Length: 443
Image (tube, rainbow, N blue to C red):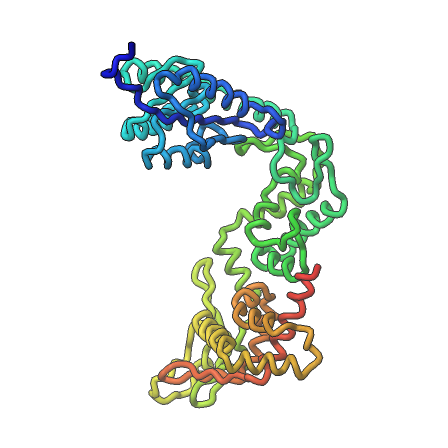
């Protein structure tokens, strides 16, 4: 006889979470994730009399470490828990959920806050009891210990391999290829590396050399134009000395060197100088942008000049009246101006003019009239708007040439600068700037 007062067990919605650290074997028809799910489904079926039912959604993270909570399926699981859609989380082993004691404690807080029970089918746990939590913490401590020991073994192996000069993977340096897990010289690229080191000794400035390499279309190992940051990393890479480096310590490598000791020392003697000193040397090689273009309101030419205080050099434009000690009226017109400030103002005005609708219309019309119709209107507009990027990639001498073509005169008055531009030369300048860029993109 059935007791009508006996209530059926409460329906408990169960979600299975599975995880595998590596992607190896995931392509197989039956993999580790399937095996974990199968065991969990069997366990849930055995608890049917307790009201356990399996939810439809699957929460599987393949190829993701348990040392992080940044897992797509785990995030979906936690979101569903917060929405009140799950009562029990079932895993094959507790380390499938997390290998970090700190992370696991965060997960348990979410479970407790939402009244969710955590179950491992191969280890009998119930997180609603203090003893269950204690046992879990002990096992997780061992799981974390095992993970850290494994990481230490890997680090020790890498260090031992580096000490033997072995290549341990990573980004392959320009000048080398990898064959049979060893670095071998790529003759064409090695010649490029040697040329870069040699040219740095001649130029003495990474800024100037990077601009030259970019203008010449010199590419790195990934097929991108070489930038200043990449150039610094290349010049400091001891792989080119035939060495293997581990945590700052260099060891004789199995691979052949590309750069000899003398050239390496020459480069690093220059790089050992104060960055400010090298920057001053770079600036001293930069021609004055406004030479022959800048005058006072009285018509007197202003000429480039510089002074040096300690290791720093300051550039100016100085009136010839001041240099020749001529008497000048007290009209408020400055006779001495910082070169960087004046040049920045002129370049800023050029940028402003190039972005105006009138200039855009003028340039596109000129391209249509001339033999440059193959340059799309969108490319012309993009070049005008991106003038700052184009400008930064030019040689100092090329920047000076552009200024001479675009600026007719700069007049210094008591109120500020009056910049008279050659608007008729803008189209020609933009054509010159765009053609090399299009060729570069085509290559």
